[in-house]
Every structure is written in structure tokens, then in C-alpha cells.
Image (cartoon, rainbow, N blue to C red; front, side, top):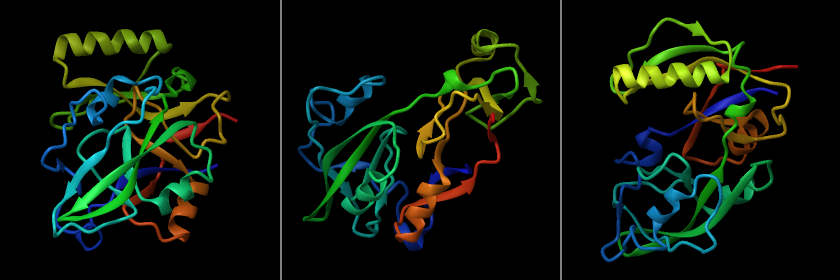
Length: 228
């Protein structure tokens, strides 16, 4: 199975004048309410027992509506319309929820969904075969490639680097090798801990493209290998 890295479109011909497309709320919407958007942030390994109130997202008049909408709110929360939701639900997404979301453009409102997923597969990384680099998220500076002996060794080195160089520094996977236990039926996932990418299968990529869905783009995941 081939995998691809998903990114949000920056093409102004597709998304209009703003990236991200959504970066503000309507007047009166409180994202910090007990059932507001920000309440979802504390649920990293499970889902809330309530339906969040997501009626209050706004885009500017020069921003175009796409099937997938970029936002500035969270890497783990994705906005999409009914058409995109239907396509994704035909694939293996792991653990997820869709919540109704209302998007406003001026006084006109559009029905969208918030895709909330739980996905972390760092336990399935073969740490001995994976190559790493020290990485500064503030300026993009990287070290030479190196290897670790185990997950515990990786976590120790990560802790030392962050302590000595500051929180902007960490360790990222350079070429990531997933173990045989990794579920290759997954069509959408993140590894987390040592990698910030969102990966999609070739199946899902092809389905999105063949149906003409807009807002997401893909490049081959040359950094990812699966043990056979």
C-alpha cells in the first residue's frame, strides 16, 4: 500500500483570499463554553459524552467554499461538507466522530461537519530501524540523521534535548519504519509523538480526487515504510 501526506490547499484560485479559510467566530459564539469548540481539546484519547455546539464559524466574503475547509483551530479537528463526509465514511478511518458545524459567509449559513479523530500509532514504530533528526519548529533547523536503540531511548533523548535546548526543539522521525503489527487497512491516520503529518492511503487519495473534492492536496509519503 502506498501512502500520501495530506496538506490543506494554499491555492487562492481554490480557497480564495484567506488561509486558513476559517480563523474567526460569529459574534456571540463562545468557543470556551462548556460545550464549545475548545472543550474538545481536552479529549485526546476518547470522545466527549455530548454533542458540541459548533454553530458559529465564519469565513470572509472573499474566501471560497471548498469540500474540505482549512482552519486555525486544531491539527486534529477537520472541517468538511456532507459530500466529503460521505466519501471518508466509505473508508477505514479508525476511531472518529462527526459533529454538525455551521459555517457562515456573511448572513448565509452552510451546513458542514467537524471530523474529530483519535489516532496515534507511535507504538507501532520500529524505533531501531527509524532514522531521526533534532528539529527546531521555530526556524526549521535540523540536525544530522541519527538512530536510537528503542522507544525508551527515543523518549530519553527527546526529554534531554527539550531540557537543554528549549521547548521549540524536539526529535522528529526522518524515515519512519512501521512494524508488521501496524494496521495497513487504515486509510487515514497520524503517527504522532515523532511526526506531525496526516497520512492517507492511496485508496482514499484516489477516491477524493476522482470525486473532485477540493481543499486537500497530497504528496507521496517517501518518509514512511511498512515492514512486510
